[in-house]
Length: 276
Image (cartoon, rainbow, N blue to C red; front, side, top):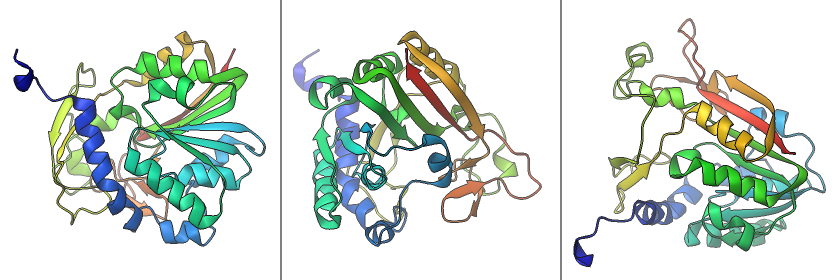
């Protein structure tokens, strides 16, 4: 195939979209940056209840976007490094750190480049909410985590449950969406063409193409275990930080849940694991 006819690189398409949304996200009510600047945390109660004491820990935050959670972890006393593949996100993270006086390090790179770019021998690696669908190789992800952790170091993730991918998502009522319309088991990227941004749907994006890879819960756990991590817990949750099933209702500032009386599904999960 001639070079000018080659298919676009899905990672580069995603990077272009994430570069574009950085300014939108920093200004949006969704991320509550103003509240963070007033001293509040961006970490939700579920994460806060499970991560434990991070004070003094050398901590790596993978796929940190523009650094809100990284800086929140630093406020809790972690010696935090955030990594993201978007140069604009890293620039925004550094600006936010300077603006708030919170000390953290930010580096630009893809997840698999973390050992060379961010370093190794971390006490803890953290990542959360809507991150894994952007990674084509979950095995390489888990191996990178193992390489970056010191022996006995801990990994934590909170993530949307892959079961929500299978359900209808075009109707407004929660009960109308509890129909399986997609396979749970998929290979290769799923291509999307959507100019809307989840943090501000009123915005029309120029880079509207994105690519996502669906990873089952079993694949995630197996990849971590095979990389040499011992699973301490796998928790499933009936609340999520975005309305993963249309019609979920907001319950407080952090979560969405099924409407009262409706069937409750596992819409999120969290994993804690240690390098053996």
